[in-house]
Each structure stands twice: as structure tokens, then as C-alpha cells.
Image 1 (tube, rainbow, N blue to C red):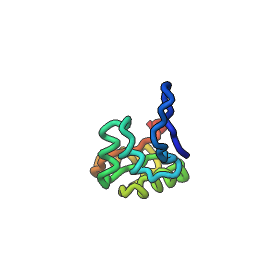
Image 2 (image 1 turned 135 degrees about the vertical axis):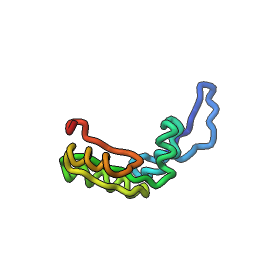
Image 3 (image 1 turned 90 degrees about the horizontal axis):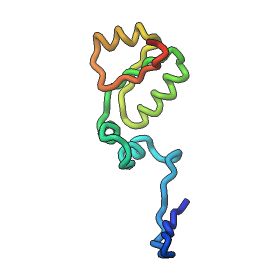
Length: 102
């Protein structure tokens, strides 16, 4: 896909290739998009220990796959109670939580 960027004056700069996000690596998307908050851009650079709390195993696996692909270590809890217990006794850089478990 190309973006010619034609302006109102008719000037057309050299076409540039635009990466399709669906085909890009997750960490590239987080790092390269200047509209992402700084925390997301930093997250793309650092390997983090992340706890995923969800009672649906398939959801946990999808999230785990994307985060591991980006280089992070992923831990999981299958209930709100288990997530709270793990968060109370272990140290995580981030927690992904299904808010319906609260």
C-alpha cells in the first residue's frame, strides 16, 4: 500500500510505503507510533514480567502469544482470587485483568 500524500497545490512527494499494522510485529507498532503514550513505547523496548488474569483459557492464550512474541514473560491466573493472591505475593511489571472478575 502506498500513500502519495498529494496536497491541495498538486505537489506530490515521492510515494512512501506504509506498513500495515495487521502484518507488523506488536513491539514495532508500539515503538514506532508517535501517538502511543510513552509508557507503551517503553514497554515495547523492555522485557516485562506480566500477569494475565482471565477465567477464559483461550483469551489468556491469545494475550500470552502476543506478549511473548514481543519478548515479555507472561504468567497467568484463572480467577480474580488467584490473580489477587499472586499479585500480593509476587512482583509483576504489569497486570492484564478481565475487569469482570473484580
